Length: 124
Image 1 (cartoon, rainbow, N blue to C red):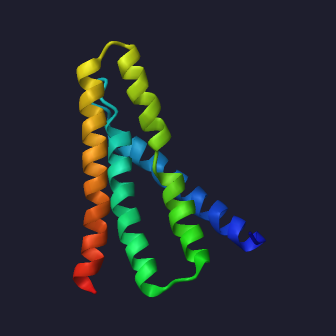
Image 2 (image 1 turned 90 degrees about the vertical axis):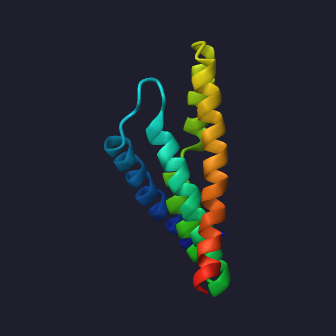
């Protein structure tokens, strides 16, 4: 990998991380339910579907994928936070909340990625 690749990932990651922090401030948690992380994962899944389909259709340079998908969206999405929060809910005995969070995260994020790809196909 070239220096340009790593710089693209780093710059994109900084932008994505700032966006992630912004969502955490803007979207409130609802009791023990980690709504900000769910919102980020859903938005990130939609965005990755849109961007992957767009970059593929455009036959874009791998540098764009490094910047947008690996950098921006990698810095923005929070699957590791999702995993930890789900585990913590189980450890706290909040089984129903944990299972609801798990199901909503998986179903809505896969749907979001598919919707993003579908929207690009619709307008192309």
